[in-house]
Image 1: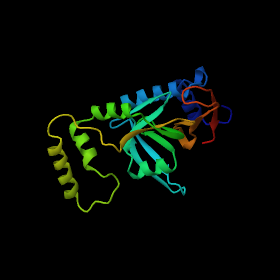
Image 2: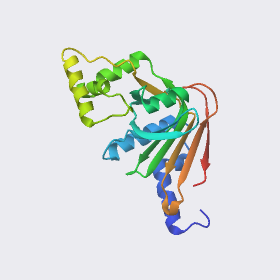
Image 3: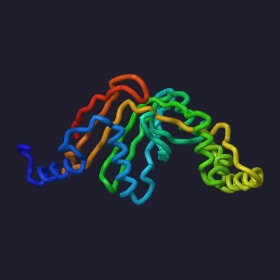
Image 4: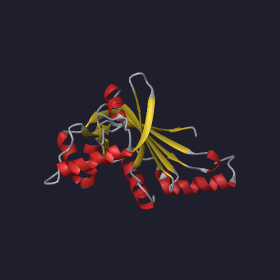
Length: 221
């Protein structure tokens, strides 16, 4: 820590204790994400599973929106949407995406990039069945990302869906599905004073969604 101010030295030591740096850098980004995500769920006041999803169309024009993480593991990071939405159309044309978690209470970010695959019908059915009935009806009522003349039009469609499926379970719409991002690049960002942030990068060294080793290093703040 030669040349660092006392305040930066003190922060470096504190941060090392918090992140486990003193024991050496972790070699498993999934385990590190699990730990950070658990800490975010304990600390964040709202929606720790919220993440920015960036996609791009076939011409490379980007768009971004917030979605909710609904599953994660060594096979990838999963979210659900209408395949006819803007995000769905862009993923069909260009099946690569980036995710960003920002846990403000912890002053941490995680950036994840990789190709996208669609979940199985069984997975989509199981998750859809777990949603509240109003959320299920809303998925039928919403022509997601399509132009809407008035809010009343949507509310009328929602009421119509309630009548249509008044008895029994609400089926999953055919174009409502899930997507899984297979991580090829994961960056863990930790806030430090004076913008001297720590950026730890993992890049996949071998092929495969759940196997293969990772290269690890640091990025300049």
